Length: 276
Image (cartoon, rainbow, N blue to C red; front, side, top):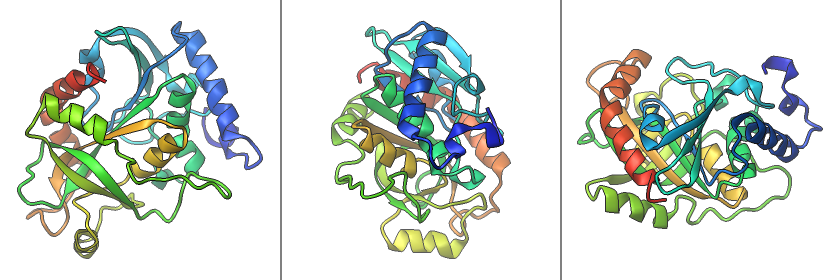
């Protein structure tokens, strides 16, 4: 489903009803009536789906209402149902819509709302991002403990007020630390993109308390909280941010760092998912 045919483009549509319809379609196509966990796998994290458990179903995302084919190289286009070793079912989302694609916030957060509509109470959001701390080498996984949303937008519509005090669940971060006590944490700063941040913008992010810079996740996390989900956020540091890195930034560098780190971080995420 693409372009003008997407019902989420209609400002008079109800995005929650569309998410429920998408969840019903996933249940029919996958044969799984209920999912317990949603996972959005960003750059470098895709192999985790293969390690988490038994793949029960794999659906082309564009078969489901509200979803479209990913526009970014390095992102899959599948909705995968995985049976975890503990018997729970995870909906693995490989079809992320980024804010910079200009499809509107509703489409950015549709995957999260759909996961919630399938029954998921936990949302795991992962991304590839730039690191501000110079000791974070490419390939370092970092837990997100808070965010700064610089998109000047929100998935909340109208007079909808949601508390974001503990948006990135401490309980879930504690579980991640049990699996790997060496995990560091940081504040994620979402810029609009698609251009990389300037060195001055990175220094601004650092000055206001940011440690990680990227182009996703924050809007999805807000929508997950609105849906009553617990959120676990992970960034794979694919490069040092502009002005901190000694070399120019490139998407190829991001993809290569993700590919190099994929076996390690995928195993880590699979171990954590088994405990959620």
